[in-house]
Image (cartoon, rainbow, N blue to C red; front, side, top):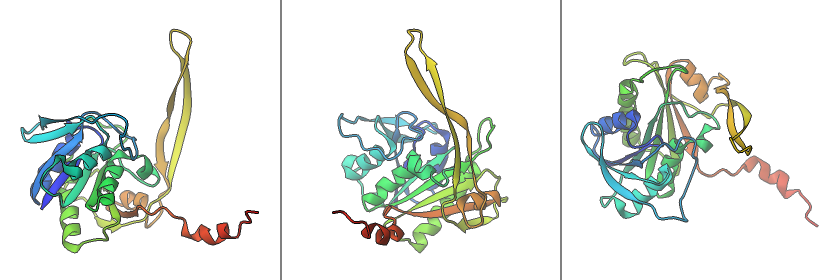
Length: 254
């Protein structure tokens, strides 16, 4: 099995290194990841400038590729031919923070896996529910759990139009309660607009605010993490609100 590893935090991120190392237990690994942090970049496809790809090395000395494109660009580049050998699985992560609820529309980690599915390749996104205040993170347990989830998913198989969004509690080996299949929960955002002026009197803005929270509801990604379980949420790219079609069809257009 040939596995493409990418992320949205950049090719030097420790979460990517840990994920790549564990994926090598499952098959041959190629890394193609952004050359900088693209967190909260969403689903990007760069169309109006050329994309560069260059060779680099991970911290363990293994070869990797890096690009000045977004995470989804990296996946597209690899699958379109920059990586010559056909890819069987794309894994993205490990993101240092959870991607829950509506986060999936912002997340470069998740949308990189979505890009794989659009191209007809299986995609899994991995994120770590790290503490709000932390020092250097230990990605080892999460990476080992990611390998277990990926191995099981590949063995069992899942629909080709589905992305697996996996969120892992920040725990030590042996502390995980298990794996739970979940639905998206409700993310609670507390965004605030921070307005400032530069030295020349021109306005500029930050989107700030408190760290988002979520509703701890059983059966959701939030609920699983709160209970100590690894959350696996199947996401479909068809965003059609089918329950609204009948209502909208009653609209009168004349």
